[in-house]
Length: 205
Image 1 (cartoon, rainbow, N blue to C red):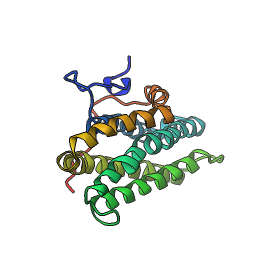
Image 2 (image 1 turned 180 degrees about the vertical axis):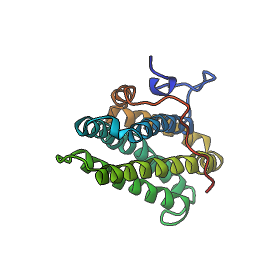
Image 3 (image 1 turned 120 degrees about the vertical axis):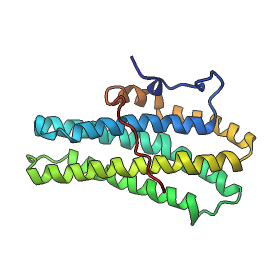
Image 4 (image 1 turned 90 degrees about the vertical axis):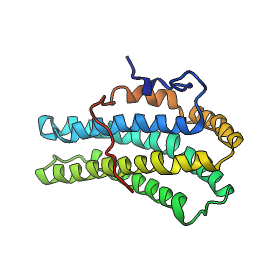
């Protein structure tokens, strides 16, 4: 049975329609589950063959490429960030610019994982150590990024954006989900998701 995070809820826990910020935060919970699965996998590379590890890394990298960017980051960059800019936030400095840079860093790490997954040679001990560095680097980077958005950027958006604009975002998000095939991607995530006790570290800014 899928966890609530992976069921693609359209309502808040209290039964009311999900607002735009809740929608984005729910996607963060999905990503934290994937990060937990990646952490568990990377800690036990030596328990599997190189072929098994390569295939699993490929599954992770493909999901991150197909979900994190077109489903989640694009909602922020094309909708939320643009709304904040429309309401006075600068584009090239401050929180919007910082979050865009961190998105680019995430993309670079996913490209590195994709390259490693496609490597045909046997993995040496040094290769595995390098791979762990990339995977743990991604986990740390995205965990910190999620914390900053949940605890700083999103509360600012709720306080600064008109309710009507936030409501309109939900419609835009739903259209983007349909175009990106979010439901199918969440079904794929069910096989990767790592349940608690994993949780993102509560790092301060």
